[in-house]
Image 1 (cartoon, rainbow, N blue to C red):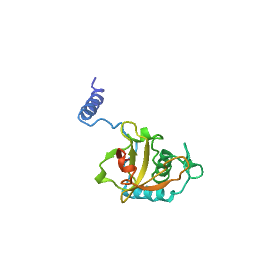
Image 2 (cartoon, rainbow, N blue to C red; image 1 turned 45 degrees about the vertical axis):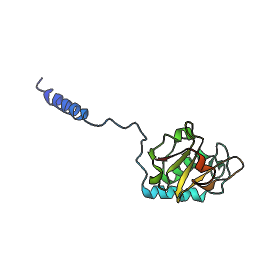
Image 3 (cartoon, helix red, strand yellow; image 1 turned 90 degrees about the vertical axis):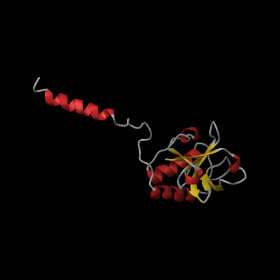
Image 4 (cartoon, helix red, strand yellow; image 1 turned 120 degrees about the vertical axis):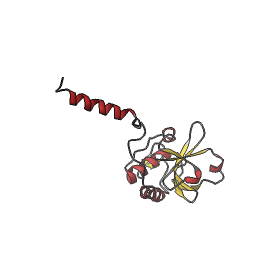
Length: 156
């Protein structure tokens, strides 16, 4: 028994120390983006304006849909692979208030079941891949169509 006492004391100490600690996070397995990464994301997204829209597209060569654009930009500029669907993006990262937006944040449209997403690039504007036959473009959150949509903001 004497030989096992140090092991028992160590085990008990570790168990007790763990009791008051915060449980491990079940969220994303990456750290929050730096301000520099967020800026790089916005700049890269702006550089893709004019790329053709294609449902299911996720590269500049094949074209983009809205979530494909987000995935491509985040992966290439921050090494982060966001979820592939708009519904999944609506739970990605942390919620952000409109008055706290910064470049690189996600803009999610639709209440209940979200239907569209883009990347905030500053000055009330966002880059997105809007629709079949269109191209990736820069729009204003306060534009006639988008200002009427329920909007949420997320910061990965």
